[in-house]
Image (tube, rainbow, N blue to C red; front, side, top):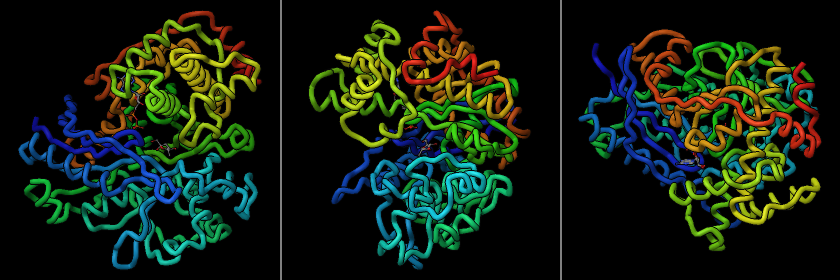
Length: 501
Ligand code: ADP
Ligand code: LRH
C-alpha cells in the first residue's frame, strides 16, 4: 500500500511543534520536524502570545517537513490551545496582538454576564473558567480593537488563515468559546445576545475533516513546498485531537490529556447538562465524529513548570528547565515522603503566573498541612495533588454520566513523567496506559489521513491503529488506597468510594 505523509502543526502552551506522520492502513510513524518554544510576553501589563514568532515557528516547521519528506506531503492540519483569538479588520489585518488566557483582564467578567450560571450551563454545557472566550469578549467590550473588528478568528483558525487566506471557525475549538449549544452543535444565539456578542464576527463553522483551503503562494515559496497543498480542518482544539489520539481498545476508558493542563474525563455521545454536573464544574466540549469531551480542567504540569521557572530565577534548584534538570528533580520527588501535603489542583488560584512555590506552600498551610520546604518536596506535593485531582475527576465523571471505567489512558507530555503516571494509577486504583506523548499531533494526523482516504473507519479503528503502532507503557495500581482517601479528606473531599455509588 502507498504511504501518505501529513504535517501536524500542534501549538501547545509550552511549545509548538510540526510533526510529520507517515500513514498506511497498518502503519503510523511520527517524525518531529521542528519544535520551538512558546514564550508569552507582557506588554504594558497585559500578557500576550507572541503570535508572529509562533507563526514563524510554523513556517520553519513546514520547511523542515518539506525537507524531511522531499515535499511529498498530502496535507497540513493545525491544532492549538483553546479559547484565545485574534481580531481582524475588514482587509484582514490583525488589529491587536492576541491576549493570553492567563492574563487577568477577565477577572470579574463572569459576574457581568446577564444570564444565571445555571442558564448559561444548560445552554452551553461549558465549565466556568475565567478565560472562556465569552468572558474574554465581555472583558474586551469597549476596546478599540473589538469595536473595529470585522472578524474574530480562534488561534488555529488564525494560523490557518495566514497559511491559506481562507476564513473559517472549526467546531471543536468553537465549543470552548462557551457560545455553542452542545445539543445542536451550532451557535448558542440566545447566550450571545444576552452577552452583547455579535456572532457575525465568527466566520462559518467547519468540521474536522473539512477542506480548509490551500497554502498560499508566499507560504509555498517560504517553506520550499512545491505544489498547492491542502489544509484540512482537524480537531483544531488540541484536546480534541489528543482525545482522538487515545489508543483505547474498549469503550469503557477514561483519559487524561496531561501537558500544561490535565484534562481528565470521558468521551460521551451526548452532553450531560444537569445541575450536579454544573456544580461539579464539568465541561461538555465538542469532539471529533459527533462526540462530547466530558471533562474537568486540572492545573496540570503548569504548576511544576512555574515552580521550576521560579527556582531557576532564584537559583534554588540549579538543574535548569531542560529535561536533565527535570529528571533529577523527579527522581528526588520519588524519594520524598508520599502524600505529606496536598493542594486542590483544580483551584483557579493557580492559573496566573509567578510565585508558584509560595502559593502552593500557602495552600498547604491554609489546610493545616506542612508547607513543602525543598524543590523535591514541592514537586512531590504537586504530583500527589495532580494524581488526587485526576482520581476525583474520573470518579465524578463516571458518577455524573452513569458510565463505568476499566482503565485510564494518559496521553501528552506527562507520559514522560513515570512518577505522575504511577501515582495516578495508585490514586485511581485502576491500570494506567501511558502513551502516546504526542497524542494531539497523532489525532491531527489521523483525521487528515482519513479525510484524504489513506485510512478508513471511525474513532475505534483510528485508535486500533494507534494501539498497534505506538509504544505504550502500563502502570498497575500499587500501595494503600485508603491513604488517598485520607489525603482527599484534608481538602474536604468525601471519600471517593462513597461518592462513586
Ligand atoms: P503542551 O502541549 O501544553 O505545551 P506538553 O504535552 O508538551 O504540553 O507537555 C509538557 C510537559 O511535559 C512539561 O511541562 C513537562 O512537565 C512534561 N515533560 C516533557 N518532557 C518530559 C521529560 N523528559 N520528563 C518528564 N516530564 C516531561
Ligand atoms: C490545553 C487547552 C485546554 C484549555 C486550555 C486553555 O492546551 O487547550 O483544553 O482549557 O488549553
